[in-house]
Length: 353
Image 1 (tube, rainbow, N blue to C red):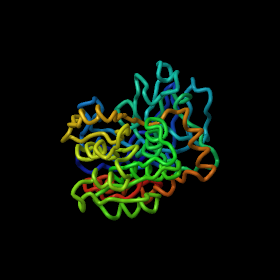
Image 2 (spheres, one colour):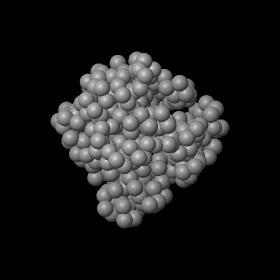
Image 3 (cartoon, rainbow, N blue to C red):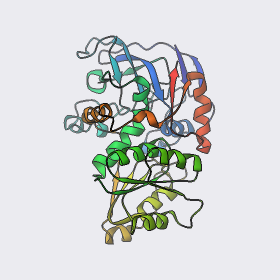
Image 4 (tube, rainbow, N blue to C red):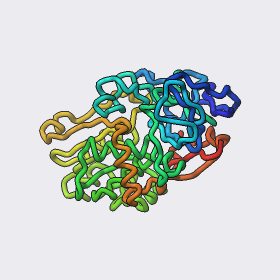
């Protein structure tokens, strides 16, 4: 089968032939119908995240935002069969640890993220394996298409978990979203759909225009103001209720915290680059005196999918609006490389394999 393989960090992925996977007893094989290309893929391609034990080796197949059809079933799998339409959350849990048993599979003690490990090859390929398939595969309702599900991927569902669960977003809240890439645009759309007032902050007017289309009530080009946090405070009359760093660099993280009013909540969604390596200076005295909360957000618990699908069926959430372009597997290497300059607008999705 064909796959886009990381042969050397920072060099274009190689679209080549590899062996078709065979399922182990707990696995299914999923034929890929659609897969998003995420900034997390870019980080891994660059060789980032070794400082948290998440770097990938050369020879890895990336891709962790897939939807597809079950093509082969391991002997121990009980709830799936060939032909089932499925989504696969990127954080593949074991289904048995305390976090998984409590409904927080995104925090699994032995999480094996799809496409982020040599033991979990990803979905930039015609097909890919899924561990503990009975636990990790989510059957797609008829109302959700493959491309739409790939748009949900990790970015949309992470933004939903960040706002609805981690920040406890309420109707009427002001939400500052720093970075209008895929996850940032998702957060803007979700915040507006949930009755909040999102502000999009970025350095590119093209992304800010897309943010307005998706529901941003205000936008800020941070290159055109003296201080993005002060601009947010001027709009919100004192500071945002919730602020998200959707990029993961020191400047956006610091700006996000400094955009908040008293008792505001910051949510860190973007993971950092090789420059920060997870270490960022923060105004902890101000955070203490103003009782500012700092939350991390990673993926979304599997138990939340039914709610997400219900909101989509009702028309409250429309993840297809976040999709920037559809492309072929051959175009994936160039699209991934273009993320060096933050050129992609919305979520690019591979639909031709």
